[in-house]
Length: 113
Image 1 (cartoon, rainbow, N blue to C red):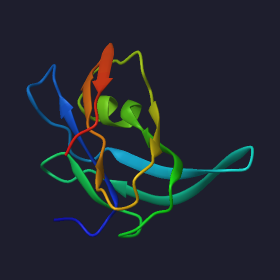
Image 2 (cartoon, rainbow, N blue to C red):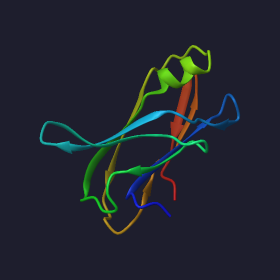
Image 3 (cartoon, rainbow, N blue to C red):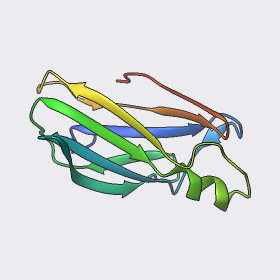
Image 4 (cartoon, rainbow, N blue to C red):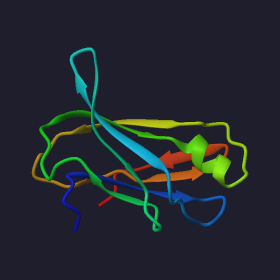
């Protein structure tokens, strides 16, 4: 189990495998803007487990995935050079896992476990 309250993983659905080496930034809404909490990279299994503290306050958060660099390293063109997902952390006692299913021209996400 991760020490981070918020985690993610990326699956490259076009290649049928995890997406390693993707830079991921976690930010919290702060007034009218965003404050970066942590930056990490996905591991060989496409997971980013160390994004911030074990506990975060309730509020709005944003995960930004720098997908352009990942696809460039694969020699693949992409329509989405980055993907930003904004979500609400409502229950401070629950773990929040926000996966990204990614291809060069589409993406989807869901609330994971």
